Amino acid sequence: MNEHVWIYARLIGGQSAGWFEGKTALLLDLTSILVGSVLVLLLCAYGYIIWDKHAARRRTAVKSKWLHELSAEGSALRSYFDTGEIDSSLLDMSGDQQVVMQDILLLRLTQGPKELELARIRSLSWRVFESSYRTWLESRKWSERVNTLLYVEQFHMTELLPKLEEMLRSSSCTPLERFIILRMYSRTGYMRILKELLRKDTLLSDSQYLQILLPLTDEMWTRLMDHFKELPYQVQRTIIDALRIRDEQSVKAITLLEALILGEDAELRTRSFQALAHVDRKDNDLLRDLLLAWNKEGDERPRSERLVVARLMGSMREESFIPWLKKLMGDPSFQIRQEAANSLARYEQAVEELRFAALEHPDKYARQIAEETLERKQYGRKMD
Image (cartoon, rainbow, N blue to C red; front, side, top):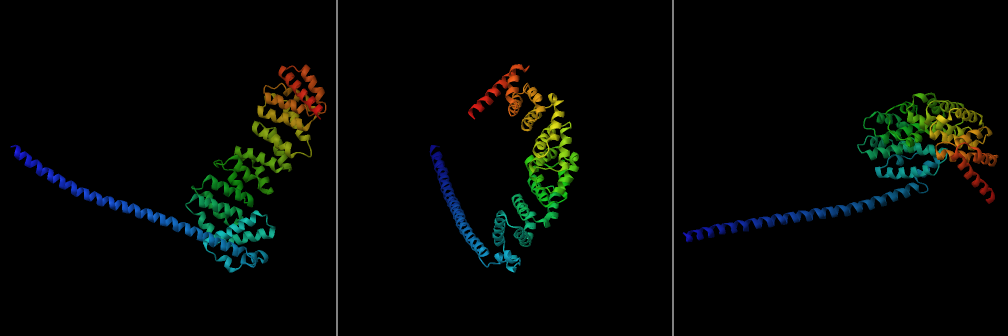
């Protein structure tokens, strides 16, 4: 019995050893194939990197050659800027040549070209890039579309405005693309800008709206102020800031600011005070009357508004404001008290008024801040 078990174990063990020997050979073959494949892939990747670097160096060298040729004396491009006549070679360029041409024209734009050269740059860019730009504006790559929109804006391609309208109507138009298109509308005086600004669903920041509003033509500004009440609140706020930055002196602008100061919206009142103080330099009577009217309800006004008014009273230095500044020195807000005291210190009779406030003001905080401001002012005089 034991002899049979031993013989059976030998037979099974022999068969197992043979099985493992066969599988080991197969695993070695598979490993060799896998390692070889990895090596081939690595060699291919390395070869592609070497080829790509070589191609990039070659493209750079070719572009440098084209840049030199286009910029050289007597070139077709230089001749065009001198005479205005377009050589056929400028209109028959490859994609890389167009990129070089684009860089040259953009560089000229940054150098502040004269009106004649500017017109020639825009005319040439339209004839050379129009087809390519139309294609790129339909690209699925967001970055390519955005870059093309910036080129269109730089070259002032008004001929593509209908194409930009199509992009605006598309559901795939992103906020950044919409912003660039609206800025293009603004720079060109395109009438559709008013319709776009009236939209309630445009997702733009205050800074972006400001970039759109500042380049508007005088005609568009007039139309915009006529529709002020219909505009979204964010656009209304930004319009007031734009009026201040543009130093708008028109009767319509002054009338709008006056109406807003007398209105119910606190933020629009505050911004309008700031804007009117900046643009109404020739005649301060209107601003003085508005400030005096404001003081009748000043205690009920928001903190930001009280702060602006205290600052304006210091810049105008009207004697009729002194009682109101002394009253604001007792304001619950420390910043407003300080601003009112600083404004009062700018008046000719500041020393007497501050000394009186330090002794007689009913508010103890106003007395303290009047005394501190008086000390600083007197110390400043000694230093002078």
